[in-house]
Amino acid sequence: MMRLLPLFFLLFNLPLFAQTGHPETAEAAAAIEDKVIEWRHHLHQNPELSNREFETAKYVEQHLRGLGLEVRTKVAYTGVVGILKGGKPGGVIALRADMDALPVREVVDLPYASKVETTYLGKEVGVMHACGHDTHVAMLMGAAEILAARRQDIAGTVIFIFQPAEEGAPKEEGGGAKMMVEQGVLKDYGVEVAFGIHINSQTPVGQVNYKPGGAMAASNPFTIKVKGKQAHGSAPWASIDPVVVSAQIIMGLQTIVSRQSELTKEPVVISVGKIEGGVRNNIIPSEVTMIGTIRTLDREMKKDVFARIENTATHIAAASGAEVEVDIQEGTLITFNDPEITRRLMPTVVATAGEDNVNLVRPITGAEDFSFYAKEVPSLFIFLGGMDPALNRRDAPGHHTPNFQVDDRGMKLGVELYTNIALDYLSGKARK
Image (cartoon, rainbow, N blue to C red; front, side):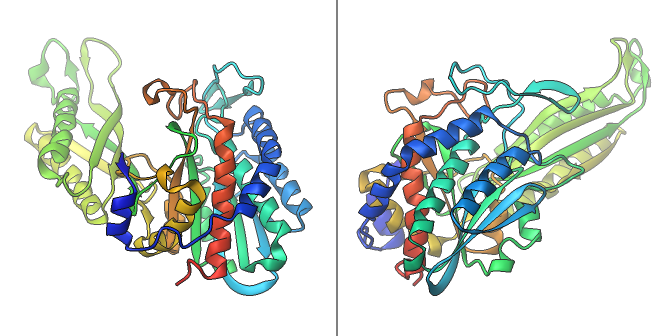
């Protein structure tokens, strides 16, 4: 992790103290902090999977209507959009929070731990907010309350996007940010800029991490099907063994990363997560299927990697007389922080969090469907500390695990950041 200040001046050449930090926002966030924590605990105790956030959506809708906002529901199945029109004309900014939980059974001993069970892909599973989306929703609800109370002073419009299915909608349904964009959540309101926050369980409370440009990877699932010739395991020469060919393809895919990709430019990841074929020990099967994920952070490198995967698999299979089918599926895009809007908005982040608490970091190969908003409008997506500062990062549970936990104290800063970004952008301080 790199310290911000010297690099900030080099990258942006912009005064750090252009904004005041809004002490009135800090006071308002402190005043509703207990409510934000209460909302988060309720959401954590009642998690819902992607495209099934029915009760979560009702909870958010009730809050927004109570604030006197115009509310649109059932966007991308369960999405909720709040529209706050300020007392003065001006621009339009979107603030986004994701609502869905994961098929993970919680093991953390908390009074508000999830006990929810459901069926997922034919299996009985627990349901848990194992990625912090409950905190995102609670923080944005808090920002909506503060901004609604100040609507007469706001020059422009704030669009609050409470999005379902960030973790991935059922394949046959679609959903998430992509569907919300397709259903007009940006165009219908003339959104100019989008802003999002993701809490991080391994970054101390009070810290903020960011990166201009490609901040999170594009994620593309792939399937490779190898077709050979079945034979008895005692006579492998009579077969075209798809198991051996698959093993060679897996190793070949890794040379795309280690020998063919310019990793000093941006990282590339190709991982095979599942391989399946055959029915018993003494039969060489006729077919093997492998599935995996591709992570890229550069658009041109992404195209190149796709072509190399197809080429590598096809030629390795052909060398053994096998056939291969390669299917690279649509996934999330590169989460791209527009350099110009990042330059304009980061002084607000620094003034809000404190200059010693904002860090310029390397990109990560995790993925986010916030990328679909960033494709349409200039956007900024940042990472908020949620780890108890007394913990060592190495001991803090990671995301998507049964032990995942974040500290409630991290949310107050998130409420302030959502609020101040909207205020400064719409006031014109960050629009030029």
